[in-house]
Length: 269
Image 1 (cartoon, one colour):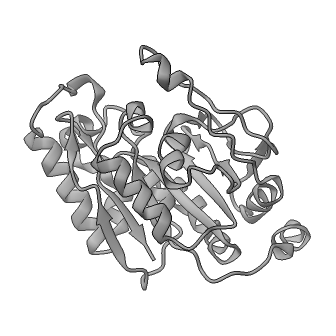
Image 2 (cartoon, one colour):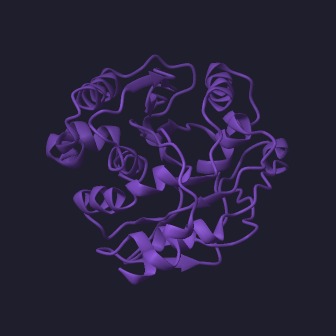
């Protein structure tokens, strides 16, 4: 793999970084002070400072190929409609990490990753990073979700990127373990099916039974209720795909928001 020798091996080696899955929920969390945003603030203060952040967000989807953003200055993308002007005024001017992003593409020897010069940071990245790292001085880059890939292919692609953890890269999957916007209701109690699916996935994570995550579609109607489309579930595969069996699991933000949105998040370290 000559590309790796040309880019990845030149990156400085660091102590192994933890990995995260963040249930990012509503874009309004970017401008609100609530239990979720305060936990993100505490998390940013507690974690060892990364060299760079790789975010796999539910909101960057491609077809036929995975892409990695290699811009030096990624733009802040306001990929939503109908929200207050204050939200659209938010900017997260973190630098990019083009060298590490290109090394990430080199690592994927089995499944190709193409460099991208058009995307930036969508709200699946910046809406919680501006609470974790408000100074916006840690380089951030994103990897897209190729919708044509199977769940197993997403997991296997992630596994190829595990060595980034030894180069100071904080890998974050950003989505929601339950995400049904059509059933969302303000001030609603959690739906029983939402609690059931959330607990099912939590149990699989605790047991390190990642095959359950890969085969989640076999749960049929329950999966379809929890995820009418799978883009908010796929990022969890990128978190567990770079995990080791010895990583310790810690949950946070264990709640169902708006009846049908799981905010459950976790750290593996």
